[in-house]
Image 1 (tube, rainbow, N blue to C red):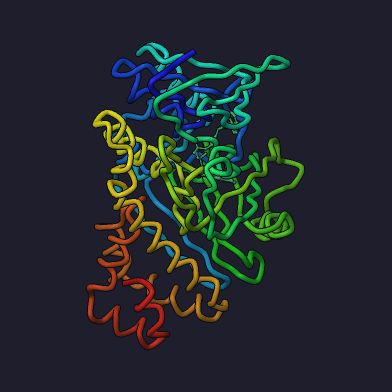
Image 2: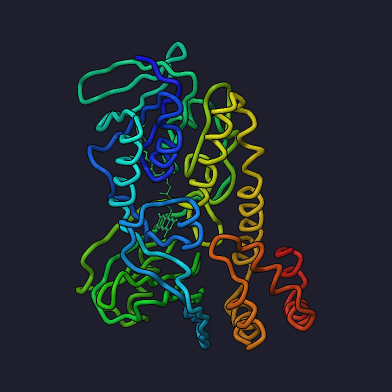
Length: 370
Ligand SMILES: Cc1cc2nc3c(=O)[nH]c(=O)nc-3n(C[C@H](O)[C@H](O)[C@H](O)COP(=O)(O)OP(=O)(O)OC[C@H]3O[C@@H](n4cnc5c(N)ncnc54)[C@H](O)[C@@H]3O)c2cc1C
C-alpha cells in the first residue's frame, strides 16, 4: 500500500490536516482507537479562530462571551457582546473532521496502531494483523506521547503536567467561564469552570487530583454531582525538530500548545494549514519556519508560565488589583484575543499608568511579558 501522505493519529490535528490534504494528494489516517473522542479536554476554543479555520459548527455545544476571574480575595469580570469562545463536544468535533476528510477522498484505518518505521515504511497493527504502508510524507499527529516523535529522535524540553477534569451538574452562568487563580488551593496552574449549559459545567485544573478536589470544595460543587471524570496530560515547552527527513510532527506531538492555558486545538489547526502548504509545495522543511506565529505565542506563553511559577499568592493579589481596574478591564474588553495572548499583553503594557504599576510590583513581570 502506498500514499502521498500518511497521518498517524486521528485527533483534531490529524483529522483537520487530512481534510485539508484530501482531494489534492492521496492521504490516509491511522488511528489506534476504534472510535473518536474520549480524551480529557474541556473543549473551549476561541470563536474567531474556530470560524476562520472552518471547524465544524455541529460540534458547538455552548458559546461564552465573558470571564469571571477570582483570586483568593478578589474578583472581576470582563465581558463582550459577542461570543468569544465556543465549548465543543470533542467526539463530534473529531468525527465531523474525519467525515469531511473521507468525503474529500481520505482513507481511514481505525483501530490501527503505528508501531514504528522499517525500511522507510510505517509498520501498522490492526488487532493481530501487522502490515506496512509506504508514503512520501509521514505526519506524526499522535499526541503528547508521540511514538512518531520518538521514532525520529525528537527531544523535549518541556514541563509535562497531568490534567484532571470533571463534568458536574449545578447552576451556572451559561455565557461566562470562571478562572480561579489561588495558589493556596491550586499551586501549579489555575482552575477553570466552563459551562456546557445552565445546568452542566466542565471543571478542571492541572497539577494533582487533590488540587481539583480542593477547588470543588471551595467552589461549593458537590462531588456526588460529578457525572464524568477524565485525566490527561499536556507538555508545555518545545519538542524539536518538527521535521526530520520526510517526517513531520503536528499538534500535541510537536507540543504546539498554549503554555498559558494548555489549549492546543487552534495551534494544531494553524500549523496543519502551514504543513498543508509545505506538503503541496514539495518543501516539507519550510513547515517549521512558516509556523512562526505559533512559535512566538509558545515563547511568550513559556515566559508567562515561568513568571507564574515564581509568584506567590500575594504577588497574584497585587496583579489582580491592577487587572481589575476600570482602565485595564476596558483594554481587555476591547482588545483581548482568546488565542493571541502576546497581543493582549502588549495592549495592556502600552498604557503608561498600567506599566508603571506593574513595574512597581516587579520589573521582572514587564520584562517577561514583553
Ligand atoms: C485536561 C485537559 C483539558 C484540555 N482542554 C483544552 C481546551 O479546552 N481547549 C483546547 O484547545 N485544548 C485543550 N486541551 C489540549 C487538547 O486536548 C490537545 O491540544 C489536543 O487534543 C491536541 O490534538 P492532537 O490531535 O494533536 O492530539 P490528540 O488529541 O492527543 O490526538 C492524537 C491521536 O493519535 C492517536 N494515536 C496515538 N498514538 C498512536 C499510534 N501509535 N498509532 C495510531 N494512532 C495513535 C490517539 O488515539 C489520538 O486519537 C486540554 C488537554 C487536557 C489534558
